[in-house]
Amino acid sequence: MDEHKQAVLQKRIEKTMKALERNKMKPFYAKDKGEALRIVRSLLQPGQTITCGGSVTLSECGIIDLLRSGQYHYLDRDRPDLTPEQKKQIFRQAFSADVYLMSSNAVTEEGELYNVDGNSNRVAALAYGPDSVIVVAGCNKIVPDLAAAVERVKKIAAPVNATRLHCSTPCAQTGECMNCHSDGRICCNYLVSAQQRHQDRIKVILVGDAQMAPHELVTQFRYRTPDGEEHKRCGLEWLQMLKGKYPHIVWLNPGDRPTWGEYWTRTYDTIGREFPMFPLTVEGLEEAMKKLLVR
Image (cartoon, rainbow, N blue to C red; front, top):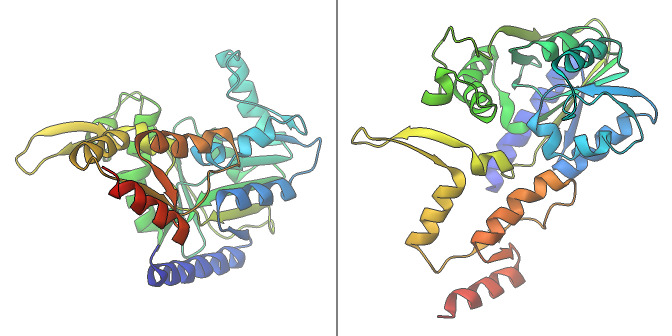
C-alpha cells in the first residue's frame, strides 16, 4: 500500500480504537492475520468452553484450526455429522459459553459494531450471554458512521455472504440489496453495539492485513458491461483473462507464503499455479526481470 494511504488508514484505525475504548470495548490492532491469531490465543485459556458465529475471517486467520486443536472445549457448529437439531442446541449453548468468537459486518469510527443476521444466533450472543466476546474484523470494515455501515452491508457484506452461502436471494443475483421478502433472506435482525455496561466484555481485534481471501478468487459476481450485457465471473477468471492477454507476466508478493492456517494458504497457492511468483524485494525483482526477459 502507498505510504500516504497507509498513514491515513493508520489514523482511522487509531481513531476507531480510541472510540471503541470509550465505549467500554477492549481494542487490539494486529498488523496481519498471524498476529491476530496470536492475540486470540493470548485471550483464551485451555479447557474453556468456546464457540463462534459463522465467519470467513475466523477461518482466514487460522482461528478455527486453533479452536479444533483439542486445547479447548469447542462447540463446533460446522461438524458435518450434526443434525439440524444438534446445531440448534450449539446455538443455544453459546449463551453459557466462556468465550464467543465472531467477526463484524462493520465497525464505525465512532466505536460502534454493526451486524446483520438471518438466524440471529450471532447477534444474540454478541448482545448477551457469553462471559467474553472476541470480534475479529479486517480494517476494510471500518466505516465513518452508522449510515456508512448500513451502506456497506447492503452493497458488500450481504451480497457476498448470500453468494457464498448459495442463498436464493435477489442480492446474490444483482450484487446489492433489493430490500427483498425472500424466504432465504439473510438480513432479518440488525444490531448496533454502542457503549457497553460491562467493561471489556467485548474485545475487538482490527486486522490490518489486506491480502486476498480465498472466496474472493472463486466467488462469482454479476456485472454489467457499458453496452448493457450481463456477465458472471469470479476473481480467478479475471486473472486468467489477464494472463491470456499478457502471456509474459509475473506476480510480486509483498510477503511470504502464509503459515497461520491451511485455509489462508489457498489464495497464495492458487495464484502461484497461474503466475510465476516472486517476493517484492530487490532480489525478487531481479529474478522476476530475468524471467520476463527469457523468451
